[in-house]
Amino acid sequence: MFETILTYKGRITRSEYFITGNILLIIFLFYMFLSFPLYLLFLCADSVISSFLIIKRCHDLNKSGWYGLLFLVPFANIWWFFCLLLNDGTIGPNKYGEDPKGRICNDKKSKKDR
View 1 (cartoon, rainbow, N blue to C red):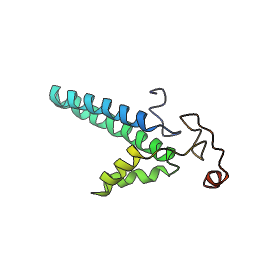
View 2: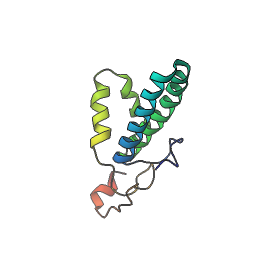
View 3: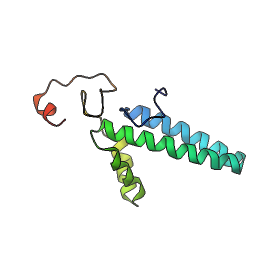
């Protein structure tokens, strides 16, 4: 799960997005109470890693990573967070890579969407 965390290429599942995000949150809270300089350092690293997670999750939904910029828009960020967390990814490969669940699309209508 964590071998490709530092790249924006590829796709990740909902569970990878959720678990990795929660691990980052726990580490973030730990550093916040530990030391301010370490907190700032981890804040920078967390921003980069979170951006990669958001881009990969967008790719799993067959959307451009630029949709991740919706996290900068008030109220739209809440809606987009739940879209990334609750919507299942594209079945089978799409233009961003193979299905992380290893599913194969047999439906001709779905293949047209790629």
